[in-house]
Image (tube, helix red, strand yellow):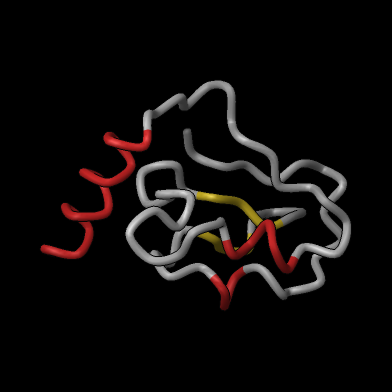
Length: 82
């Protein structure tokens, strides 16, 4: 499952540099996560780094983009091959 940033985001800028897949970017009002690039840090870390550093807990799993660990691993491998 990809992650998403909710409107509770305070634009503190700590999540974007932590993403190893460059999936996080500034949106119109809050940061956004590109579900095509988000692997929940599978392949890089044991836990999503954006979630670990978020001071307001506004990065849950995105229910509209469900993926298994295996699918996330395949996405990671595809991204690393590019």
